[in-house]
Amino acid sequence: MADPRPRPLPRPTPTTQPFWDGAKKKQLMLQYDPVARRYQFWPRQNSVRTGKRNLQWKKVSGRGTLYSYTLTHVATAGFEDRVPYPIGLVELDEGVRIIANLVNVAPEDIEIGMKLRVAWEKLSDDINYFAFEPAAKKR
Amino acid sequence: MKGNFLKDKDVCIVAYAETKIGRRTGRTAYEFASEVAAELYRKTKLGPPDIDGLGFTVPLSEAGNAFWSNYCSDYLGITPRWLQTSDLGGASVTGNIARAAMAIQSGWCETVMLIGADAPSTNWRAYYGGYRNEFWDPVGIQGPPGAFGLLMNRYMAQHELDFTGLGALIVAQREGAVVNKNAYESFRKKITIDDYLNSRQVSSPLRLLDSVMFCDGGNGVVMMKTARARRLGLKRVYPIAYSEITNFNGAEQTPDITITGHSVVGPDVLKMAKMKPRDIDMFHPYDDFLIAVMLKLEQIGFCKPGQGSQFLRDTDIGPKGVLPINTGGGQICCGQPGLAGGGINVVEAVRQLMGEAGRRQVPNARNAMVTGIGVIPYGRSWGASSAMILAN
Image (tube, rainbow over all chains, first blue to last red; front, side, top):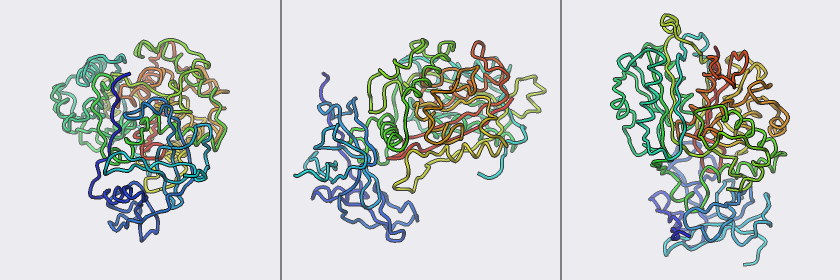
């Protein structure tokens, strides 16, 4: 096997920093559009609905439902020891979707529509990365 | 889209060219562009001084070059008065034809050469920016196969997906590649539905044979006013309707990801051309993934929603069939020459409409629908969708 490649580490920008500050405290932060009264993801400077630069960061529940998933058989950098690993498209209760690793669940137990909650993987001293696990699972 | 600027058939395609597709050829996008241009000169009896309009797709292999089209003009010895580089991904070739038609109609330029040339299997230079570094790459998702794995699985939650229908599609396209001397040589052999079903999982439920493979190659066309083409005694294929949409559902946070921009642009072009799906003689859809072809069949109206795989299983899609599809093999069976890929489907449609498809000629073909797909957005289906109807 080739030398293990490191999993890519996010490089926060001034716009995305509040997301990663929340992640460090294991809090999922989303941008909220106070005019449209809707959340949006991924972090931007502007509302995708109104174009205004008036988004507010809010701590959210971290709860959602599995909208779809794929089982990845060809590892990208840093995932070689997990193959095959599930990646979900998770619909949060707040009305946005996030692509994330599904953890603490066997592939055969994954079902579209299952309830999920956020979990965190420590990638570095500064970065906790979001993942999702079954909501019913005891920590 | 409002109006149809192509309805008068006042602009036409007079020649097409295509190189052999290869893998890790060691060649550059410039070299493929040169080969395409030389073939277009041979067919039209034109030369570099005659070309006053020049359009390109962005090559992945030159993605770090902010002056690609300028450098390639220099390489070719062409001094364009109209220069266009499209970054609609796989929708760039159809998009360029529409843009060139407008430039010619307006009098901006007279003779346009459109070139797609790329060598990503030799030289990979893509960089994306945006959300990728923070919200995509660290998740370990397999790029387009990962996104299409998500799309396929969602489709399966909403509809029945008969994998033998997708198998029938690749089996038929492989038969096209067998008789296409430009197809990547390793793909020029027949396969069976079982070969498809048994191919290894890449991003389940997506298999290896569901997707294209990056190769190197080039293709292109020459366009001019119809009256001039007639005077020069050149063959003529007419774009008669075009529609595109980019960043489909871009502001939606929870759209149905199985619905694509082709649900908009497909019906658009049919309406512009005053046609029904049954009036289309052959279909040359952009085929990065088998399921993309299937979704387009449903959303353009060739079959009912949710019935795409059954339609492919039960319909003769070969050159003599009810609805010939990607008769030259498409990208899945010719190899995808990076972001010149959209030209594979376009060139085959033009070749057919000029009656030059040899053993795979569709008898009496009067028109074709061609489509383009560009870019995989975050958690949706695909970003850019185009549809064009060509006629002879």
